[in-house]
Image 1: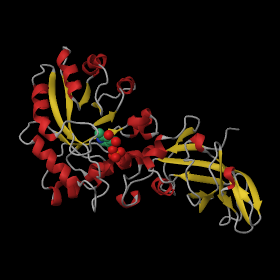
Image 2: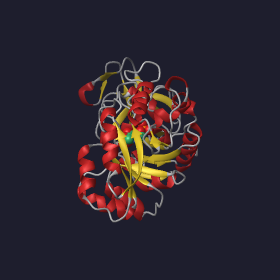
Image 3: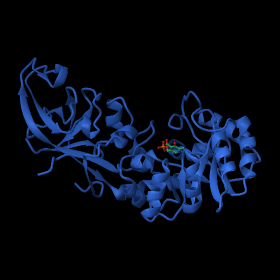
Image 4: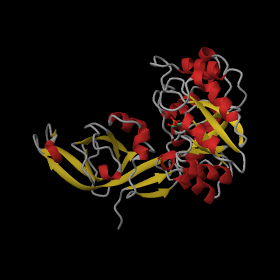
Length: 371
Ligand SMILES: Cc1ncc(COP(=O)(O)O)c(C=O)c1O
């Protein structure tokens, strides 16, 4: 018998969330972001789940090639561009669109003769201060790229630092959009600005505070996987969970007042209580730093983590589920228990939980809400 822990990926929810992204950003084409193994869902599943996207965005050239091998014929975008000159011929051969975010990448393209034209995304740093040319350097970078004979379309892009936080961000979307418009003013080419947060607030982005901004492409990631970058719960945006992590109770302990649980004896029973041992630990990707009180479902009833998460197991309070037994079904996150809620209680974000799903966890596919 296999260990009861398994993840269920919901392809129907992936399709639904993509449709939701489309309805938030009408008229824009969608790069579905499938980096980090499709946020832990598996690259091939990401490709199938987002078959209706206009393109797929990820990080590594080798994974772009894998998408081609798997039969993806639509555009592919390398979100950080190339890491080595040896990748440039692959861009041309396999029709892969590369981000260009620094002068070193421009130079690599200048020194390589392209035997087939390629499309690029030129990235502006509008305040994220990770990748991209400053607004005052952008025009010069554009001109150098434009002068390279093998470069065909240049899409102008930027990335938002606080798209989840419209109320009181340290750096507002409106300010990043203003810098982008100033730096890109008059330059020809399509525009790509929004990640999930931007897409979810596209209506505000396109009018109101920011003024009209051209958005030919959007680049949602987390919303396609049923999470949000922050702010309101995913279901309020009409998003469905795409990954459910399930397990079972494999042991039960009756505690007396003062008994402690697990490594470090961090939890002490305030009175007589029953705890269940769940087959899931940090070696499966469940966060070790999850605090006492992090929500868990046992037989569909909400309860919480007690004690420290260990490598292969964790312990939960069975007080609200008196009929729980060895074999009772446990949901760690997903269908019925939003991943963002678990992440918040554990002091992290849904992105990290999804991406950290360990290779040893069995993965199946099923419809959301099917059990
Ligand atoms: C350049 C770029 N675009 C889009 C995304 C998708 O972001 P999100 O998952 O918040 O939608 C990312 C992810 O970090 C990114 O780096």
